[in-house]
Amino acid sequence: MDVDDHFELEHLYLTERECRVCNQTKDLIDGFYRTRKNKYNSSSYSYECKECTVKRIIQSRKLKFKQSNWQYPDW
Image (cartoon, rainbow, N blue to C red; front, side):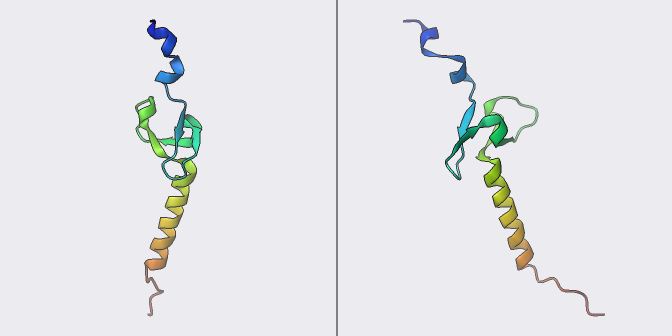
């Protein structure tokens, strides 16, 4: 039994990942943000895809803006 027959290079280096939010499988480099800039392996990418991250940030910013009771000063 030869180990090389069971493993390929793609098994060692991940090329795709499943998003934890939308459960879609996307390309690792194009679909996910890198969280550790000095590392170049698959563990340095986030588990939330870019689209879900943008949606989450936009919704949280809208909530903060709506919750603030800012008004023009009455001089």
